[in-house]
Amino acid sequence: MLDPLAKLGLKHPLIVAPMAGGPSSPELVIASSASGALGSIGAAYSGQAAITEFVEKVRAGTERPFAINLFIQHPQPRIEAAMVERALAATAKYRAELDLPTPQFVAPYEENFAQQFEAVLKAKPAVLSFVFGVLPAEHMRAARKAGMLIIGTATTPAEAEALEESGVDAITLQGFEAGGHRGIFDPGAPDSEIGLHDLLTQTLPRVKVPLIAAGGIMTAADIRSALTMGAGAVQMGTAFLATSEAGTSAPYRSALQGQERITRTTRAFSGRFARGIENRFMNEVDAAAVMPFPAQNKFTRDIRGASAAKGSADFLSLWAGTGKGELWQGSASDLIEKLFVN
Ligand SMILES: Cc1cc2nc3c(=O)[nH]c(=O)nc-3n(C[C@H](O)[C@H](O)[C@H](O)COP(=O)(O)O)c2cc1C
Image (cartoon, rainbow, N blue to C red):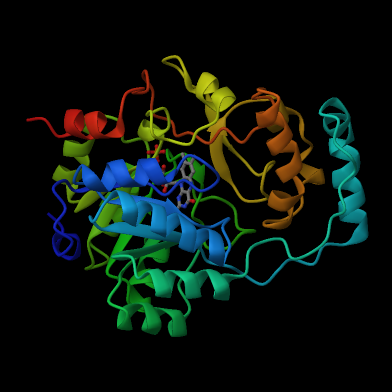
């Protein structure tokens, strides 16, 4: 078992992925941690008060360690009026279909990171994990002083080296197979599209900190294979999306059913590459009418919300990895037990 995680006293070398935007419910975090894995709060879209409230719920359900996960922020993109016009025109028919008014689209486009971080410092989770870059040095010092274990996310060996240089305790290596947002540091950069196997092989000789394998891991055999290759632990998201505790919406759950989910990466929903199940929005939206992250993410929120409320998966971000097979619909605890039975 990986050294820093060993300090946490986990029963299994498994992190149940942070899945911001609904799936990571308090119940899923509690069940994951209580079953001997590390549950993760996906706090990227939550403000200070919401983070505090979420943590209270988790602590009321388990005394076991858990992680809080944030998005590293970059300078806000400049959004020209013409860009908004184009995005509005490209989405007008969907808003009409969903009975939505034309939105008043103004900055800020994401939560206040300083306030989110303050909530994390106050909550003092065992682990702070993050994605999209390197934690600024002042935050790194503060998190370390508070005794948190710090885990960054890399999609290339070079990103892993930058994270190690910044002083993280462990690195989640996110292969191209992974569901959800690609952790690429530069929001405007092309995707290197490195699969987990190559990413692990190429990164292992280049960094000393423990590596956590993520992307397409669905079964006990997948876990054994990643650990045998040299990963210290695994992180799994998609496999937990249909568990009874997950906060996954009903239309999202329906779209996840079946053996052969067809997924690909898209910028249509948020402006950043993310992998999800193909649907109408992903297939129809003109790439030229997509604003940069996080502006596009805020811009499509009303559409995604109305789609879920209507019970339709047409306009939802159906984040899921390439992993195939029927998803477990029982409890997360039973799934964890099944994954680690010898
Ligand atoms: C619905 C969903 C939401 C996600 N949200 C986050 C997030 O908020 N923060 C994060 O670091 N990773 C997020 N991820 C990515 C996971 O951390 C992880 O890389 C991925 O789930 C691993 O691949 P898998 O889904 O094939 O198991 C998300 C993944 C999914 C499926």
